[in-house]
Length: 297
Image (tube, rainbow, N blue to C red; front, side, top):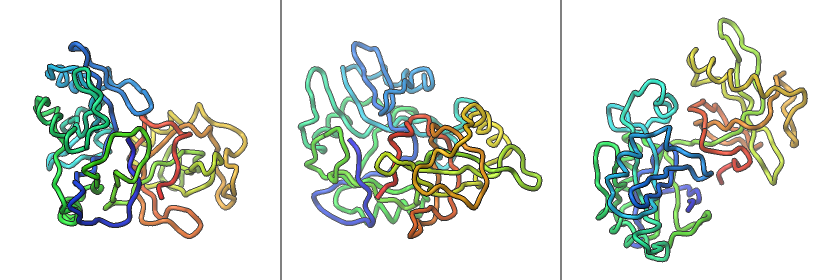
């Protein structure tokens, strides 16, 4: 189930509100003690995050759970950058936040109200430092949004109490962002300047009615190691012609690549021309396919 983007937080007694976690969306299936953890696009996470698999084995039920894999910093804040480097450096606390229950011991729970599903989920979940229940507050969305702003969280989720679980994007779930973030497709890169090595900036695009259009450059957010790591991904994908089919950028020479790599960036605002102002690189989205990436409206 996917959420639509909303502009402003609100209070409503018919809604509940959760923290919007900044990580990888992940479904977990547990059947007779066997666990399968995977992304929305069916990318297997079992080998990447064995700590979560082990934690899920403590649940003594046959279930399908929806949640988010995050890495928390020392202040308990989910950091996408830590998520990127976790398998290499093991810095931060890996956590699977469970927020919905799709199936329980032979019963399809998707037709139940959200609040009922969450009650069952909280009851069967065996919480520990890796496995957590994603709690909520009722009615007071403005209060939670204010807290998210103070803590520097990405934003909050607003969910209709009576919502059923449906496998598409719906206004029954809303994401209300404190920090503007966007997934984008790497379509090329520019030459480095001065003392910088590897590349200068990534040229970004998004699909618009199955056509690829330019949405900005990002050169911020990289350290030297990250520049090297990203360049290794770029080199095998170099092509001669631009992949853009709608108004390719002409003011900056670039080396073009096949539009396969998805990144996440934060930015200040959209321009009237549909370009992101001041996008800053946050990390590679290994859990997303390029064809699924569009601008969030």
